[in-house]
Amino acid sequence: MDIEGWLRGLGLQQYVTAFRENNVEAEVLVRLTAEDIKDIGVSSVGHRRKLLEAIAELQTAESSYARFRKVCAAADQGC
Image (cartoon, rainbow, N blue to C red; front, side):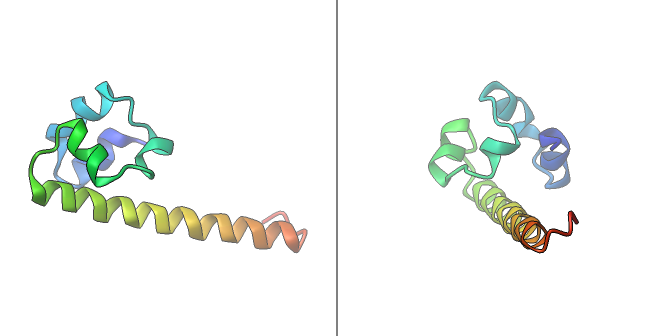
């Protein structure tokens, strides 16, 4: 996943360097908490809320994909 592109898409490109310096990659991104985001340097409450909502959407998509793969494996379909 392109974290820089994701942040730019949210209009939060000012945090690209902070995410990079804190080694936030896709696997870490979906597990970030409000406290983590604050520790990274996102001080604006509005920006933190925006990030948390976008992360929740990623988690939902990831969960849906995992369920899809599980169903395909159980059906031996190799979807």
